[in-house]
Image (cartoon, rainbow, N blue to C red; front, side, top):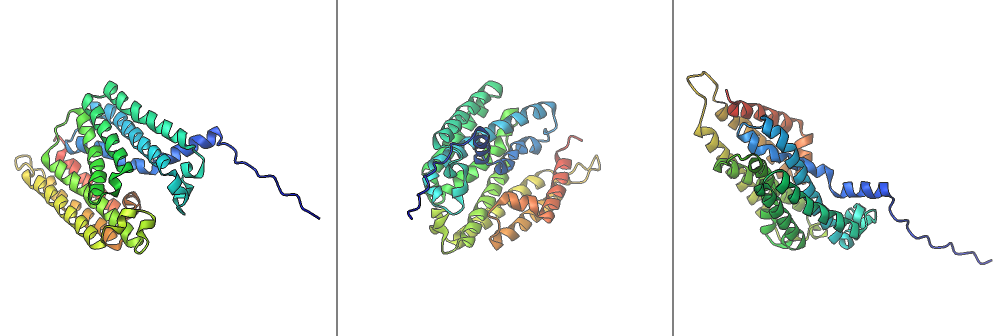
Amino acid sequence: MRQRTPERQHPEPPRAGGLLTGLVRTARPKQWIKNVLVVAAPAAAGELLTQHALARLPLVFALFTACAAAVYLVNDARDADADRAHPVKRHRPVAAGQVPVPVAYAVGGALGVLAPAAALWLCSPAVAALLTAYLAMQLAYCVSLKHVLVVDLVVVTTGFLMRATIGGLALGIPLSRWFLITTGFGALFMVSAKRYSEAVQMAGKAGATRALLTEYTTGYLRFVWQLAAGVAVLGYCLWALEEGGDPHTGLLPWRQLSVVAFILAVLRYAVFADRGTAGEPEDVVLHDRALALIGLLWMAMYGAAVAPW
């Protein structure tokens, strides 16, 4: 007896709740921790707890997060076809069909326009210009720059540096050369360690996840993160030695003492980089207790160094 062929069922369109959840997932909430760097410049200047900073920095964080979300949405919409062929990325909301490609483009475009406009209205032209530059650079990265050797490292590093400087721009705080050197090379250290870890873990099949990894050698990436770590430490030491404690007040030289904690933090993170397990920097920072304790010690010393005694 001939069996009836079941009718082909068409997938239902995403429901409102599912669509909203998919948009939030595409915006990568786990990555928002990176945007906490907007407090770096005010903290370095000892102005983090001022009334002006407490009122302005949450807004700056939200605006930078909106710009980053816009980039993720556009990137996932552009790469939807390629992601569907990937064993892991195919579960991303856009690739899985939870968020339609046109919707991802529309929401990403809206965030990319509204965030700089809000910054121009609520903050300053300098903040709006930096957010616009960030969007342009990251979109260029999504389209082509991520396929260019060395330039990809520079672009990602510059994104971190922009996060670290925008708080200073929003509050009108001058950015010192030591802050820029230490922050820039510290970011390059983490970015190149991430690439090195990816290359180690995907040895022999690197092109399956990030095509450019096949162009780098692990030896070169190791050289980059070691060089960057060394320059970051040097820049921090020069800042710390530039001014110590005041002998007339009896204060300890917290600037100089903080060098110990800073170097320990770099050495501890380098353990994960050397093992090839620093592919997710936020996981390393949040889940390693020793690194967390060293970080707290450094923040306490640094805070004592810049506090207005």
